[in-house]
Length: 123
Image 1 (cartoon, rainbow, N blue to C red):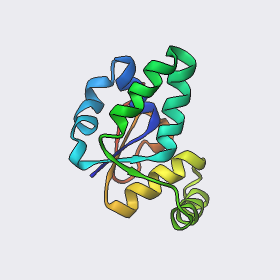
Image 2: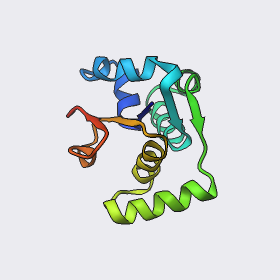
Image 3: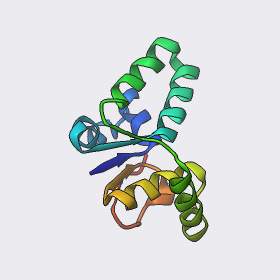
Image 4: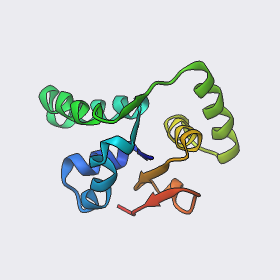
C-alpha cells in the first residue's frame, strides 16, 4: 500500500523533476490510499495556481485510489502520533494512515526523511 503526500502529488501534477519518482505509487491505484487532507491541500494549491478546471481534474485523478476520510478515531491517532513524532496536522494524518495500513509514504517533504516506511526524494 502507498500513501502519497501532497507535495508529491503537486510535483506529479506539475511535471516537476521528481514526478517520475512518484508516478509508480500514484498510478498503481489498486494500492493507493488517498487521505482526504491531501485532497484539501492539492485542490487548494491547484485552484490558486491553475484554476478550477485543473483543480477538479487533479482531484479526479486522486479519487482513483481509496479515499481515507478523517474520522474521530483517526484524528486521535494522528494527534498522538503528531505529538510523539513532532509532525504538523496534515503530516500527522498522512503518517497515521500509512502506519495503520502498513503503507509506504511517498514524499519530498524533508521532515519525513529518514523515517520508517518512507520513500523520500529531495526537491
